[in-house]
Amino acid sequence: MRVALGVAVVLLFVGHAAKLYSIPFVLDLEGIAYDARLCLTMPVGEDFGPVNDVAPEKPLTHELMLLPSREGMFMVTATVDTLSDEGNVVRIFSIPVVVGPAQPASAPVPK
Image (cartoon, rainbow, N blue to C red):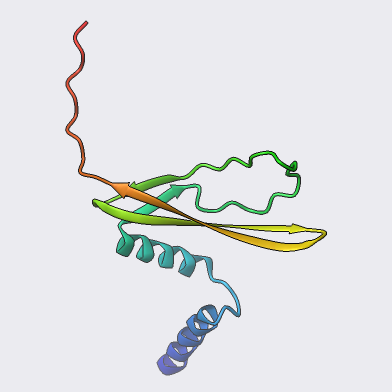
């Protein structure tokens, strides 16, 4: 019985890894493990779903919040997939993020 249960659990994870289906709990764990190795978390702005009513030549605003746990240079990559009558265009943007040493808290300004 224990062997069958073990095989079932392994097959469950193999199906998730092969992208046959998605297990939300495992996706959360993968995200936490990835953020821990990278030392940079993105608590706000990670997902930006499809937008259908975008006016031509108008900016599309999106905000990110990055929380680094160490100094260093990080790269944030954004992919924009545009679908129109003429076809599909994918643009990839790489944005460097440089994190310096923490600044000491400044003393309050006397009034």
